Image (spheres, rainbow, N blue to C red):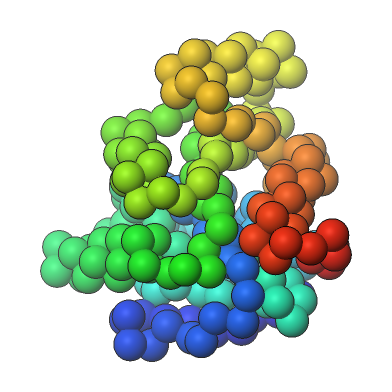
Length: 196
């Protein structure tokens, strides 16, 4: 599990080597922390107190075939309007055109639920025919009862979209999320091999 590539433009996208799973969410939702938890590495994905540090698509190699792709955060990134427009173009192009993309994890803070951008991204992925799911982050900030209530409320709002509750601090839900990634990977390859 290691850093594989970073792309700040469509022309810089690396050659695909197999299925890819993308991670999307607001700049302060805990994307880097969750990626580190998924990869079992403390500092592989850079975490920061300053939102918006991911400025391109960052590719992490899980093995020789599977990659995890960190998308630039949205919502609170303090960048210029033109730079954010370029991010949007790059991300939407990747999500629409990357044939190897098998799933997108949309991260949302369990304390806030899905906001406009997250809902719009889900609709965009539906239109593009890309499977996606909700991943609740920071679940250690709420009691188990309140987390379950949040899951029920989000499920009621968004129908049959899967919802996974996670915490990078405690590791809760990471194993279950990996099982989902495994399934997407196996389906894409048409193989029973494990991705790790």
